[in-house]
Image 1 (cartoon, rainbow, N blue to C red):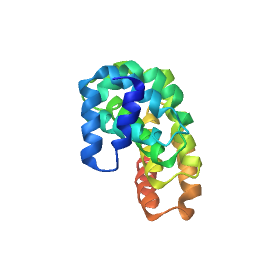
Image 2 (cartoon, rainbow, N blue to C red; image 1 turned 30 degrees about the vertical axis):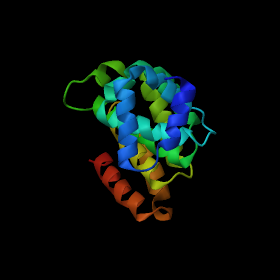
Image 3 (cartoon, rainbow, N blue to C red; image 1 turned 120 degrees about the horizontal axis):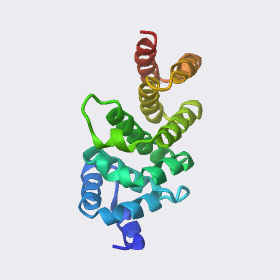
Image 4 (cartoon, rainbow, N blue to C red; image 1 turned 90 degrees about the vertical axis):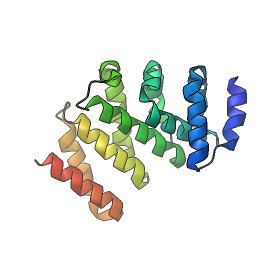
Length: 187
């Protein structure tokens, strides 16, 4: 399938779990489509970009290791994503990566995620925390940054400042997650 054909297929992706799962399995079963999906996702001003991000999120939820060959490309470009409906799944993928990285079980992500990748994830997560994003990307970013802060000692103090500063202005969902993260930081 060409990039153009995949682009046309993504017109059929919607918010339904069924559609996102169908296309995630299509990518899993046809790994040659993954770089094409990423190319479409990084057409950041295009209305199909978020649909590619939804599919990538579902694929990563099922088979996170499939993204390993593309970690350089993914992490280098994540900060360019700006459409709300694309930011959420990309932030979720960053959370998947950091959760796998700090998992007690050995996995391929632990061996594949380099300092460069971590720095790009940290940069994107802090951007999502300080920018006017919705609660979901902020929640995923809080968790990712908390985990990365176990390795990078400067992260926790910076994250705590942002959470405490924004606490009063944010939604109840933000406040609940922020309380959890601040409690963990202060342990």
